[in-house]
Image (cartoon, rainbow, N blue to C red):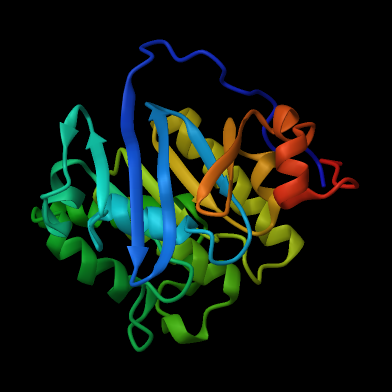
Length: 258
């Protein structure tokens, strides 16, 4: 697969953290999920989360959105500690968009009806809402299926719809949970390009996790590898694939980017 991202942003003009997770720990009963996990996402950065099943990648998304609370540690968004902020306040005040791995749309509504249903909540002004919806339909080339029920859309079209729904509120932070799962090669390339465009054109900060490690590393600036409840390695894609801890925990010895 061709390299989608022709550049890696190493230095951010403002060096301003938009999300900071500090010493997060979480257990479900006697099962430890995260143990003293810390990392920072800067404005306009694309960060990838990698690791085996059950290592806590989706749990990190749930912690950021407020679906669950950590046992210890703090979550800071735009310099504000948000541990006690409810979900709706986090998403609206700090403009967080979330693309879940499964679902995220109304099956029995058309693509346009889906966008209108969420748009009525996020964009009260009808004229602005219609302009935003038409812009997203055009941006993601969905005109031909705007009146098709979501349940009949292809996998790629559904993914475009879910991303469009997440973008209706003009988020500054976008969370993508396994966006490449069960997609064909061409659709993955399309989605990679969308991610890079959202960063370069809209300055959106993005966190994504996926088991398609090669596809993820193609479009991120930096990534972290989680194993046994902790971060075992972090760095640029080229740094990670040469990191012995990352190889041992996740990649193996034969993994290559191309």
